[in-house]
Length: 108
Image 1 (cartoon, rainbow, N blue to C red):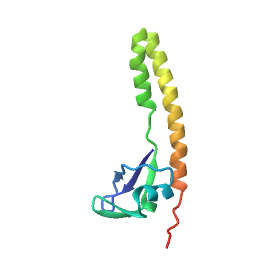
Image 2: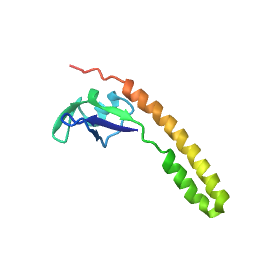
Image 3: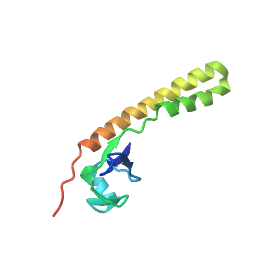
Image 4: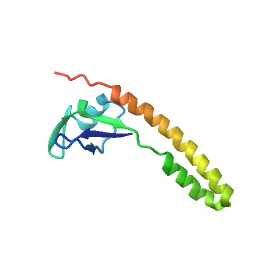
């Protein structure tokens, strides 16, 4: 899962280095409800999450490892890598949905 905010001027995604399971945890990680990215102020409610797809890289890695077993090894390695990557993507989708549904209640 990757966290980002949309640039206030361009609307382009600006990815955060921090990770968190929800917005409350993000406040703890950042130390505040508001933070600065590229000299612009954002609030944790501006942060969105998206999946960080791992299926294709896992398939490629499985295929490379499978090269040791020849053509059948490439096919089997790619299949196993694809299954592992797909499982990881499904978990990531759940994490993204949970983050994007989360709300941080501002404290006075």
